[in-house]
Length: 283
Image (cartoon, rainbow, N blue to C red; front, side, top):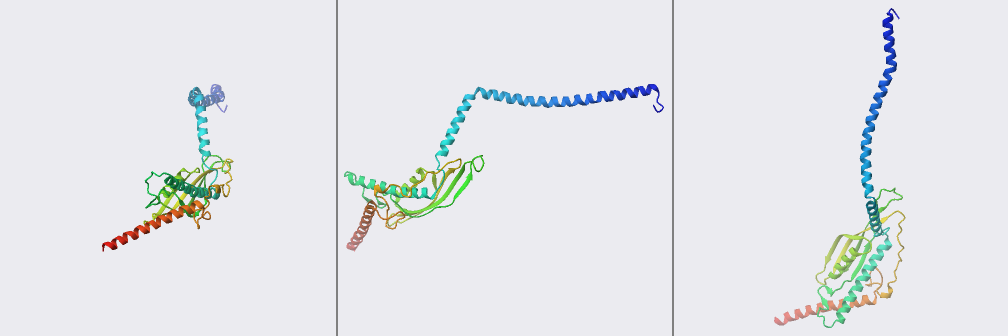
């Protein structure tokens, strides 16, 4: 071999044989050791996960019960919201606000008439005593805003609905309180965001404008129940509270309330004239 002795040639040949045989083995075992370390690390993580799952399995019944409870609460929460905010529903809300305020006022005055021992004054500076009537003058229905509130796709997920609408009405102090409570207690979730009220010290009348925010949850096949344009409320003889009112002509009960209030205003005028006459006599 190129001048090498037989001894050197044999040594070189032996080294080549060792390199060819041993080096791949060394590299192979090195990779095996690295893979073994990775597997050991994964085993540690898997063992920790196994311990966690075994601990959860011990409380399996509790977790199933809690999951069912939370699902029921979720379904009840969603069911407490309408599936949409519609102009028809808003109109029904306004009608019932007005009609029910008149019913309440009529009941209060009837109780005063029937209770002969009641010394509560029939009329007061606040208008008719316990006058909860609300006279709606104008309304505005805003556009709905839609906001995704679930992780499902836009088509299948739940969507929150927010609507800001306006209402302008006249009332007295008791009617103002009645309207605020009625809005907060109404079956469809809503709040009054802003309130502007102007008080007339001569008559006790309040003119109020509100921005009402309504809420709904749509999606996942939820449907809004149809609303009749005019509910069967004529039997109460309460359609319309004022000749120029939003919801129709004057009703008998509405006329009765107006007559009482006109008498109240006449009493105020008579008291003022008597006071002026009294001052004249003193002079």
